[in-house]
Image 1 (cartoon, rainbow, N blue to C red):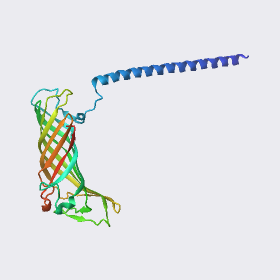
Image 2 (image 1 turned 60 degrees about the vertical axis):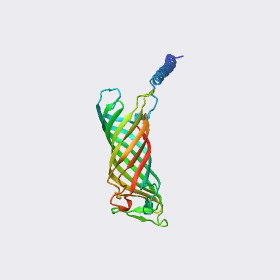
Image 3 (image 1 turned 180 degrees about the vertical axis):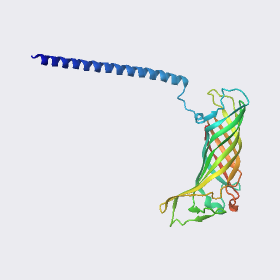
Image 4 (image 1 turned 90 degrees about the vertical axis):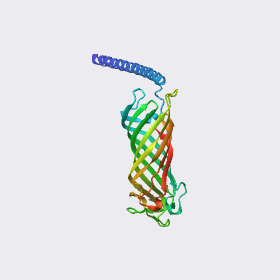
Length: 284
């Protein structure tokens, strides 16, 4: 056998041995990495269980940017405030006419299949006077949705509130939603109990509230005209006021709101209409 051929075979053997060594080393490193990861994950699990950080609480929705009303600080009175995302209200809305949930014949065009209320706070400033009592002023946004039963179209830029009955044989609305958007400004007096074993407290809050109309819309949907959206104030009250109450435990609660002002303004037929809302509060 020639010398070059012998050298070539030796080189091939060395290459095979090197590849085999690389594979063995790679497998060992992979096994070590897996073992290390498993060990680290196991340690992390122990810490998570010990610290109970996996437990999700609704009060975590109350995210703040600013000076927090923390229980770690025991100085009273103390001022707190800043940006927040809390007191998320989600519930039902009802129109009351002269103390009744039944609408008169003149206001039947406002009869609804479903009515809902949604809102939340985005900023607040307050004073905690004691461990169990504080007062704060907040601001946020609030929406009311009326899913109308009747096949009606509200007139734009018209005072008082005017509507037209649309013939269903010409245009039949499968969706007819009247929406208002308000900037809400509640003043809250909040009482809370001592801490329970799990650290949560029973809370009760109440106070006056005001609101400024930002916009109103009527959204329609029909096979004949497709989707339509009209924006106007529709004579809704430009300024609303009333009272509210909340009761809850931890970060979850119930709310009720009553607006003492007329739902519409400069519209005599709707003078006796008021809005009432109730439902669930998160981040309380």
